Length: 187
Image (cartoon, rainbow, N blue to C red; front, side, top):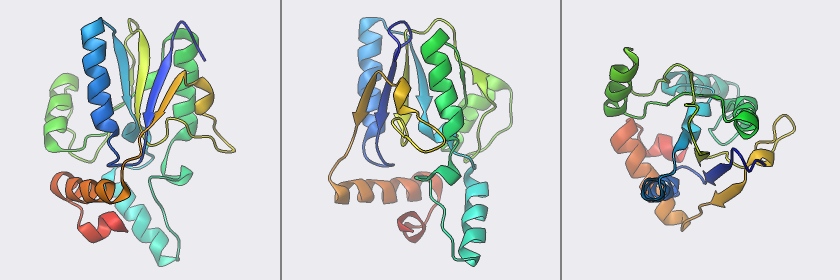
């Protein structure tokens, strides 16, 4: 844990409301003049949208499964490395997962790229003038045999809503914004 370069992590499953909590913190940061380095957990998935679909289909053929919850679909060591680096010296690398074409257009303009919804931006340095790292996503407190992200987190907030509301919200969002069928989301 770091007093000079603190890390706040808001964690919870997809559709739980972590983005709503993130927006509340962004308002607090703005009001209080705090400059955060904001990192979204989706950016530490191993696969982009098309790669994930392909990997899931391949594993199904052999009776296996793959989910964004588990270590095989995520870059836990890289997330731990970011948290360690930031806590020590306020530095690190991040990227963005582009959820929709609007986000893709925004980052394409900023980075002079030609990316699309479901892809990742290139890794880039976190600005050096930040007051804290704010993480929002699935794995802000994950501990596995290979990675211990939680050891670097100064404040960990877990978001757990009513399960039915969470799934209704997730099914709607994944269909409306990401093009998944309700069956694919539930699966």
